[in-house]
Image (tube, rainbow, N blue to C red):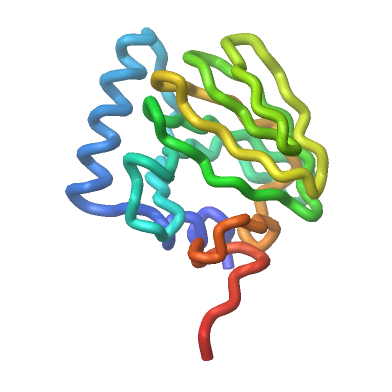
Length: 164
């Protein structure tokens, strides 16, 4: 299955997604930025707690054959991208706007615009907005099954097992 479609399957839709996209667009306008013309993913990771656990993703490219991926990741103030790791994917984060509290390998540190962090394979990481924040992810291709979440309630990724 297409990776973007798998991501969309675990996103908010309709009114709730529109509400958060509207707030996101207001912030982007304040920053005097323009986002690429792609379908945004408003992800709550299947938990139904978007204001606390979630993010908005803009997939710029996910080129499996060429071996690269580029995405913008946005979190609202206090919103967290949950703790997870990747068996195969190596990724680099660049903070574009705002600040995030990054938890990487058990160490927490605040990152600001221009800060860059290489996320090594199989190292747990998460980040939380300290105010609204926009990150650029440059990585190997995104494969949904290569996300291993610390929270077993998240119904996707490599460690999730559906009940038979």
